[in-house]
Image (cartoon, rainbow, N blue to C red; front, side, top):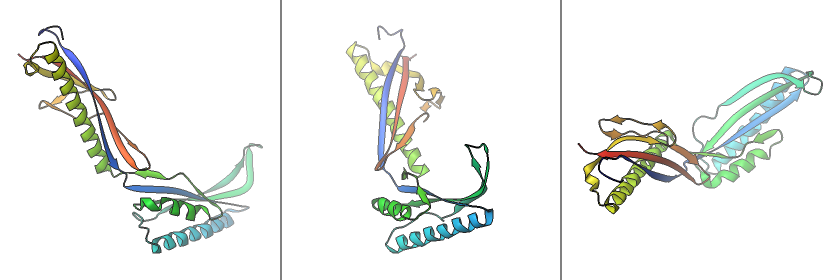
Amino acid sequence: MEGIDTTVTIQGTGKSFTDVQSVCVRISVLATAPNSVKAKTDAKKTMNQVYAVINRLKESGIVFKGELKSHFSIRPRFDTALSAESGLYEARFQLDVESSCLDRTMDIFDALTTLDGVRAESPLYSVDDSVREALKKRAFQSAVEDAKARFRFQAQAVGLDPDGFEIISWRTTESGHGSFSGKRLQIEGSQVTVGSSQASAEITVHLTYSPSC
């Protein structure tokens, strides 16, 4: 900021946080048999046990989100050592079990994984799309305000009037150069990270100032 004929780019960083809203446990049921009919029958038997466990969890007060729909697939089993079909069939059910009862996550996980033939992935925590957008908006606004405050401080430090400058361009680290829409900065580039207890968004904004005409 050496004089009024120069432009200057200032960086600002913004973060926002919120509590997670739900947890999802993805389970898989796999059965192997000499023919496709038996493989499917065995897998379906285990899935019935899964639904029985889920019903018991509901009775204990756990609320599940949405309709529990499983995905089914069946195929010949391939022997990688022989590079040929093994003569067996694999039947697989996959089910996403989602709940808003975060304090009961391990109850859900433990109850499902005690069943023979059931595999579960690590719990995946999430927030709704509307919450994600709100997080991005707050992080973006915070980053812009941070950059503006930094510019004002630096301008005053070298004896310039910060009100004599205007923003002529901007960009985010993630999305590259942005543009104006009616002189308003638009949200771009913010990423949302979801942990086991909180979801967060962080973004870095670069504002370029030039002396006002």
